[in-house]
Image 1 (cartoon, helix red, strand yellow):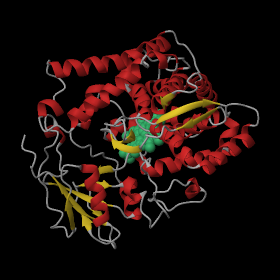
Image 2 (cartoon, helix red, strand yellow; image 1 turned 120 degrees about the vertical axis):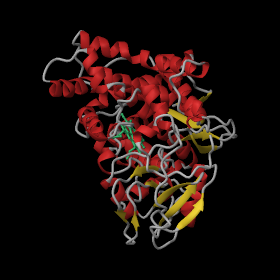
Image 3 (cartoon, protein in one colour; image 1 turned 60 degrees about the vertical axis):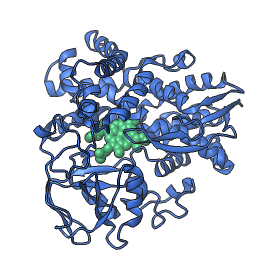
Image 4 (cartoon, protein in one colour; image 1 turned 90 degrees about the horizontal axis):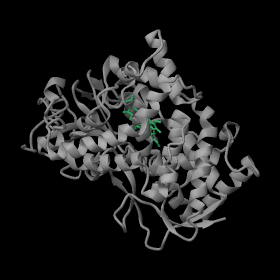
Length: 487
Ligand code: HEM
């Protein structure tokens, strides 16, 4: 397929099928008086960073081209907030939508739009709202303690903390979602849980396929060929890891004080009667599986990164220890009542997200003309790109932006300058879950293990298809290597 095709965000959904990178040409942003910044070329993330530096200082807006496609670039905090609180329609690049739909199905919140999306969010709100999640602290603590026991058996060894943390997240998601020990921690020494393996393979496929100029690779997940057979096998492995649990829960009417119960109750309320597995699947599809993935791809990176940052700054490490001593005393893992007191732990979480936001940029497809604070109007139908990760590193808002400093969050910040979870009606539904899971892990581990990076560990971040992930520049792997010492 010819890559240098002039396309913009005027995507007609029917035409989208089979055309990952193609869209209808629209009126040029230049004609609308928006200033051109640059062509960002092959390296999209690097190019967006460059474009951010070149933006006009007064408007912090403009447009760039990428393979001939125009996208408006909006970075002024006020404008970012206005776009995110006005529009909800995603603009997903390349073949991400196709890949996601082929793996999770077309009924997950991430890819839905319009009325279907509203309904899906309604059902997911019940388990994920700010009031529900703290009630799951004990389940997360149980998972953290189990992971800690395993980690302490690694005394003297160098481990990949991302892998250990992935296992904690899956253990914790199993407990909070299904009140079930899904065996993620037990699998650490046996090559890892099947779901972690499947997600790793899925991300590998996504990276290889979604940005491939050949549509047979980036879009076609249906034809019976070797490429798709491999993909289907990975997909089936992931679904098989949790489908039997859901089926059992519904068919045997097994109760649990967990996310699944809240999702089922919300679905039955809408249905007006008892649900069966088929109706649950029709309404919620693979959203339960997607929730495992949503964390694996995001908070797991923050939970691994914090150990690197603390290893580089003993004062920060000590402040976490002091807070945990003060709040937990001789107890080893936090309870719901402890959470509001773990303020510095929460600040560490936010600082990890400022420096390594899993979603470094978000795009919206705007469906009405949008007037920027500068007075310029972006025409309806445009893709609007917001470089959230680069705003997080702007010294206009963050002094010494590259230094890890949790005190950045000891006071309020200007809206639109820290946006890791996006903003508005489509913002992340798992942010409370992620923060609590992070704080529980940190508070549970910090006094029981000392983690030191090996001399050749070089911490970095790397684009993993859906977003930024932790990266070991030495091994060129999604890893944070640490030597474990029991305390
Ligand atoms: C540090 C952790 C996380 C970060 C930084 C993060 C960030 C994001 C971002 C940027 C979006 C896109 C929002 C938009 O388009 O405006 C999103 C969507 C979403 N996230 Fe998260 N997320 C995290 C963890 C989680 C977790 C743990 C869950 C579930 C337990 C979750 C569930 C979701 C869902 C369901 C959506 C789709 C929302 C929609 O399209 O309506 N996230 N997240």
